Amino acid sequence: APLIGVLALQGDVREHLAALTAAGARTTTVRRPGELAEVDALVVPGGESTTISKLAALFGLLEPVRARVQDGMPVYGTCAGLIMLAEKILDPRSGQETFGGIDMIVRRNAFGRQNESFEAAVDVTGVEGGPVDGVFIRAPWVESAGADAEVLAEHEGHIVAVRQGAALATSFHPELTGDHRMHALFVRMVRERTGAGRVPERARAV
Ligand code: GLN
Image (tube, rainbow, N blue to C red; front, side):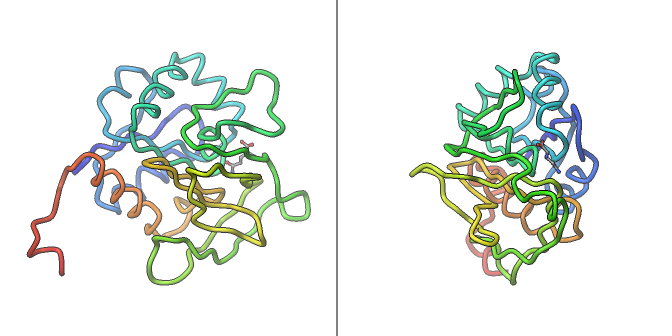
């Protein structure tokens, strides 16, 4: 099975480790460049994007993660993690940096005070079996996505899930639900990329 790292600087790291394990991946935490070098893919958790950005710079991870993402390493960001994968933030705090990977402009805390936290059923392209339970916590939305970014889901007309190549991002937190289909989608993307665990033809129908 592919080895998927969870960026463990701040945020809901444990929940992602559990969801990835349930989806059939091997997992580890990433706090140093040497640990990043070991993984096939990376998850950037939810939390606070300004803090994650600062700590990534402090731990010497900003440039190494950028380089691996540009090199095609599969990456999945949820909420603050989505912000970290954006090429541009509409309202960045001063000095706030991102890893990039998806040609999109994001708006932080986009859903507003009345709607700081809520749950909603979200239909996601590529996820079978009905909508996922979207948990939104001071969530961003994608203000605009570039031509190469595929919109996978919208909520009330706002883009909340995007994929570009091997990079995946959601405004919501599947790691906080018992539903591992988003993580399973990501593990499939990782397997496609790495060729790891390719299933023999005759086993595919099972
Ligand atoms: N509002 C947070 C930020 O801007 C994201 C919140 C979350 O990850 N739940 O980083």
